[in-house]
Image 1 (cartoon, rainbow, N blue to C red):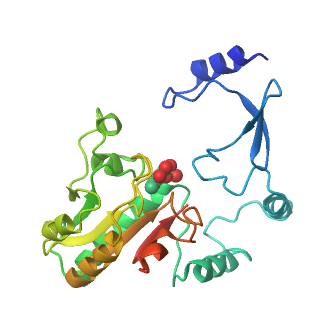
Image 2 (cartoon, rainbow, N blue to C red):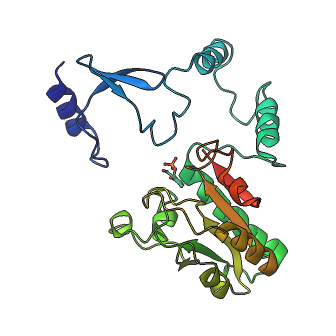
Length: 253
Ligand SMILES: Cc1ncc(COP(=O)(O)O)c(C=O)c1O
């Protein structure tokens, strides 16, 4: 098939929710990808960091193949001989005491929102259904209804309301604004250590450290969305390490 035919087929049968470049890739190895005409490209995007390990990494392929030949899926109705090992390794790697795997970043954010709300009602003593979560202007945390509801990007929200209540928006990088926005009903502050989709915005030095101290002072959960910055993408395993702090909930992907 020719380039145009691939593109037309996508346009005809798929929802128009993205606008990709008109290159049709068919193969990858390490940092390189090839299109259907055999042209080679350096993959500087790496699927927005999801493939930082490179395409077709031999150790990952071998682990996947080994498992696919042994057992496909157990669901959570049964235990299996891999889940505990995975949990333990991830806890040790990230110095966490518990982990919860998800299928996508947006689901991780949604689950964090549920967790801190319930914590707010059960532990902090926030009156039922009055929990507030503080987020930052120009955030990007995913595309579910709840998440786009607290986005400040009109193109992400427009046409999708009504939205989930309970979110307050403060400027990114402004610790004073964060502290002023906190009320007795605030359960969490959700923030990207470096804003990703906003254009790779690094906050002023000391911002995360200040946010950590403010959250401690007001008994507010600090949720760091490290879905773009985590797993070594800023030179440390987690971006929080640049400021020597630890989040209460860390989202990685
Ligand atoms: C910081 C951040 N949080 C959350 C998400 C949502 O992740 P997903 O697309 O896997 O739902 C993204 C996606 O790019 C992201 O950059």
